[in-house]
Image (tube, rainbow, N blue to C red):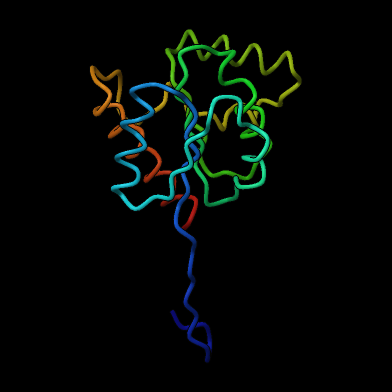
Length: 148
């Protein structure tokens, strides 16, 4: 695009998806994200520390745990990061419990509001592949807004 007398082109890095969860849903999201051209980093159980250094404004954090305790450490890191998307698996009731825990830890309302939960673009899904499509559609839509 032209900016006065200069032609300016913006190059952005590949979108990164940090994926946390050892579930069939996480495997489906990883496969679809890789096929979509995203740089996927699947978190090993307990491997939280190094991830703090790689979450940048071009990173989506996807939490696919069935227990709040399992996601707690990575969620705290994600909320303190500049990542453009944070999504978490679970029902509306589970998310209310998540919010209560985060408030008790002194996270601000606007930080907590960054969490997309229940995760995904469309409602409850019946299988892992449908959930993966829903999650990645949501990430793609958020990416368009964040990169605008």
